[in-house]
Length: 232
Image 1 (cartoon, one colour):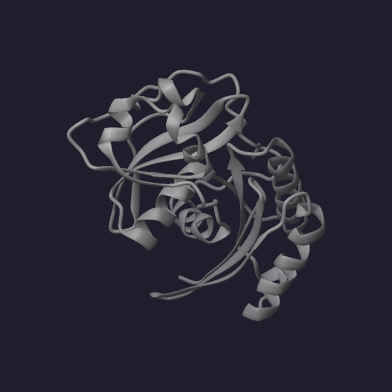
Image 2 (tube, helix red, strand yellow):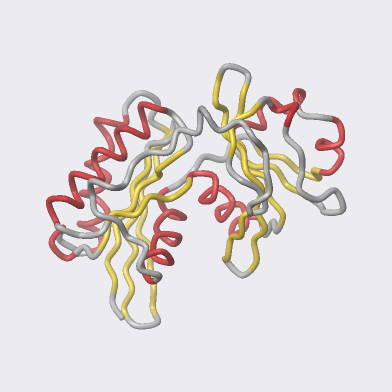
């Protein structure tokens, strides 16, 4: 089964685009990634044009479009969602929103081979967007709901596990509870969400028939979600 899937993200200080191409069992992903604070509107579409040109793919050949749905920067999420909706609507193809926190977890698993991961993004106002994950063989399984909360209120689903923390929220390391700090052997605060991992996750969702109509896909802000719970 062939697939051409475009993913884009503007949820943080970074901006990125990725083109995933599948031809039978062979999959490749072409990417662009830049740290572009306050320049997402200017840089996002040129990145899209670049990955499509590199892949020799025209917009009409795209089977689906994906975007970082959040949580993250309100302005960046709106830019990415609006751009992705416009593309998907014009091409009459499915639109897939991907969690920035889940994409961070997959990136950490692939790059550093972490298995139990807490991803956290700085939400400003003394809070973080956070979630816990278990990763194995490029599969990501949620261990908690995504939530916005002060770092001191974050609790780990399991205490008998070696956790790693990833994302800008860990710049607030001193504000996390002592038991969380003890349970985390490593924390990296300079890792940003990328469209590359969103493309791989979106391909999974596309195969499962989870694409939406362009007008149905919306950003996820999480500002009113304050509970830290295990998934039902």
